[in-house]
Length: 402
Ligand code: ADP
Ligand code: ASP
Ligand code: MG
Image (cartoon, rainbow, N blue to C red; front, side, top):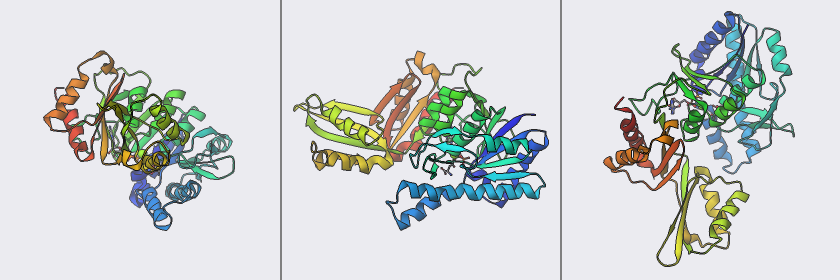
């Protein structure tokens, strides 16, 4: 008898018909003789709607209270799915994150799982219950509920699969696998039968939200093989694992991230220590900085430009304005930017990647503001209005010849 973990995202449980569809998938798996643990997300746009509700009441609500609110979305889903499974006549129990043993740290809004106490989960499985677990949530040492960050239900599923050494971890969503670019935006995007953890991790981190990046990190760490597949069409999906048998492709995929703000610091003295002072202040406030660019002017001054997550933009401006080393006029924050990236393990040994990408952008008259590279990725920062066009153009440049 195999233990199978199945995760269903928000669109897979968006309404009564979708919940009934998921109940069928789950009970088919159970009927075949497997033990099944199911992780579900909040229905449809519930999490966004709850965030909007909170903003109406208090845009500066504490993260603890936000987590208290957002946990409710997944609570609704687990109960409804359990009811649909009861209707089909199968034994089932729904559990919130804390009941399922999810112990997290206390970083409300993006808590990390410290461990899962698996007694309850194992006991329910041993009773032959189908277990439905609320994704995206846990409890901290103060007995307060926490959430794992947007898209966190993927991580909940992988964490259970790792803790219980499940035989399979299936991530059901509204597309039938991982594609070379978002299949909703790029019509020629191709489905991959397999992708390595490292490439998937880069794609997820650079904006392909089909899998949450922390879930891929955890899958790699505990060697949990993932299958990404559709809850609506029963066709094989994409396998995410350590080594793929696919030939080492130059580029595996193209991703877009619009959750970016560009901060420019203008005309600071060209002396040692300025960069240190600025980035030390930000580090102390736990603000993650991504691409950094410094350019030296002719008049003994320099400009420093860097990117942060969009919702950190205002905080960065405030921290730097109050730093005593910069005047408000020296700090510019632009949130109308997007990062477009190509990812592929083959890039390491192939010098032409940058030229191909830049040519595609040039041909489409898209201006590059910043560039960043690593062994297996190449990213450019551009104007947000050009983002979808850029993804299509770059995708076309790398994949049209195949
Ligand atoms: P869920 O609610 O199931 O967690 P998400 O909306 O988080 O689903 O992720 C699925 C979405 O990810 C798809 O609808 C698709 O538009 C988007 N996506 C972005 N990049 C990719 C990609 N490279 N391959 C597949 N889907 C992608
Ligand atoms: N409901 C949460 C979100 O919308 C978690 C998830 O869907 O994975 O981010
Ligand atoms: Mg998701």
